[in-house]
Length: 145
Image (tube, rainbow, N blue to C red; front, side, top):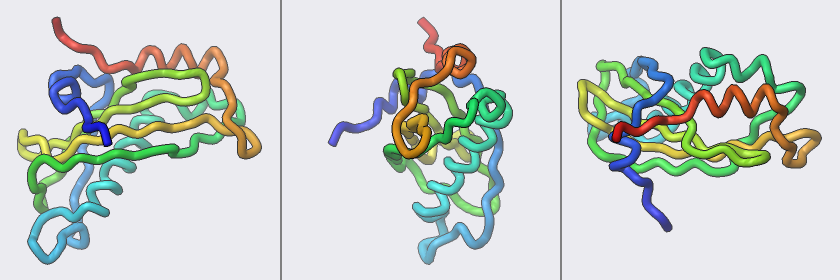
């Protein structure tokens, strides 16, 4: 299994950043935010990203289906501090795209994620329309030289 490019994600300039609160119920018996809660934090940030960046309004009847999700944990995160999640596009295909995410708490990176989402119509992969494609292109992660 290929590992995520942590250096590239760490150094990227993301088009969207939000703060997601942690909950006491996110804590496992060891006292840190558990793996399932981390997945939910990433999902919440992706949903906020989609709404804030206007992706929902240009879908033209297409649904987004999660094809894959990879999370790598870097450091423990703890309640009650919120988690800052950066989100941006890594790669755009004809019917799918790959997002990168970085979760930070108190300035430290707690986890990295990459997700592939596929546009779907009637259960089959469907190409993105031009408005969708243009919007996604504007949401790419940039990298300083």
